[in-house]
Length: 84
Image (tube, rainbow, N blue to C red; front, side, top):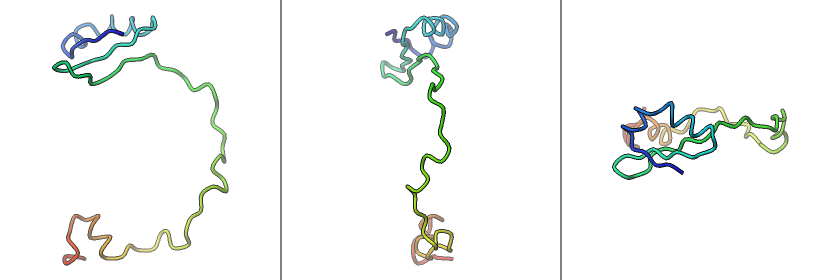
């Protein structure tokens, strides 16, 4: 595992990517604190199966009804007294 600061990562990105392709892990840090991790991209080997959640999710009959005013006010960033 290699740890580099942001400036070094910007100036040596191509070399860091070559390192990652070779199997190394690169940690990018700022002021000594890790921010990001460069790892090789992996394609999902298992294809997605359509309908996997079929029968597992129940939707209420009123799922698309208007929200009660007090809940809507919370989404709008208002307190309960300023409901629309």
